[in-house]
Length: 450
Image 1 (tube, rainbow, N blue to C red):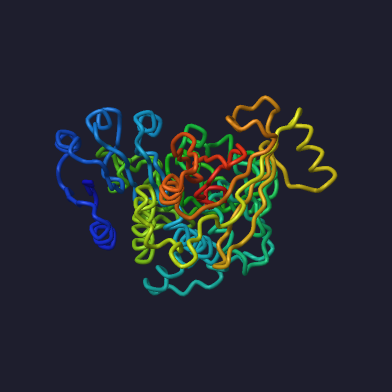
Image 2 (image 1 turned 30 degrees about the vertical axis):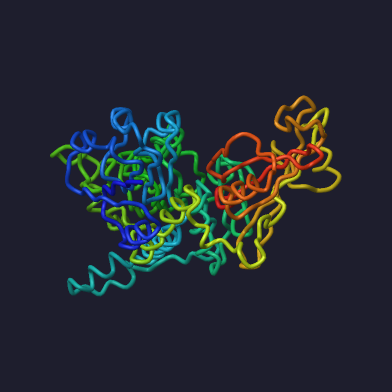
């Protein structure tokens, strides 16, 4: 198995993959067309943000099995086309979430206390105390848009402050003990601080514009450690001039290239940028919110773990041999019903289940303190998901290593149904017990639900 590394990363990535039996080759200088000429020789790619993985590239990569991006997002990859070609996509959103949370908080506190401005003035021989009187974060309402790994990390960092934290996300039931999930309109009504933690998608492209900003009832501080193209910079500049935005901490700018390695696509500065650079209430950093010494190692380790997990090579790390642990917990209970919507509503009303369109997710912690989930879901009476079983229910069990377990079960004569299927929330396989009950086996990625 040959892997082509297109960006330099933490050395552990190369070391651990080599130890696992992969052949690593590095090319940090060739152009995209040059890489396309030889990419058919590789089964895997590890990339950070060097160039765009488009249809032309994917068509040339005839033997590619996976693309691993050492970062949080996959926007530089044609995701749908890659998936249609059966290419597995790997990212590491949890690898630098702590770094992003700390950077966002640092920007916010610096803005509130005029630290950047005051520092420069003192170094220039000025001692302006009253002009640098700050604001306190306590008592404010912080709105977070995008409540995945990054948004949750920022909310966690705010725990020591007496603030109300509201979050908005397109996914339901993502709020937790650190933030209350609310409609976007409530954030726009109450927030004194807005922090953006969304990926760049068609839904978020140019999302923060004049119309969006004017819907906020209060003047607010704005932090963006997500993606620059989600913000219309000239509209933010206008709001800064008017006082609608009190200050801005921008780690990302809409003018960045997809590679994130340089700022401008043209020689001329965009009109809004010089204004941002001259404003005392604006902090700018070069897309480094997740760029720490620690996150470099964490990101690499997450990528290694995911690659080894994809190929079932993490067996040595799985706690099987002593007692041969196979099932680690109940992953879900599924049953057929005449009307799933009514049943979900009944359980919510009478038993207080925190339901969504799919049922209810129960959260618990394992012995190591990891967040784990169990799903309860009603299915339509005519569902084919339980086939070939004719029973009214199906069990789902959590497992440590699905590939290894299915190999063992096959050798033991257990009936295996279909092939392993993989989603962002884990791998799935299916077996039959002696009475024909279909059992779903799940190697979970619980963080996908957070």
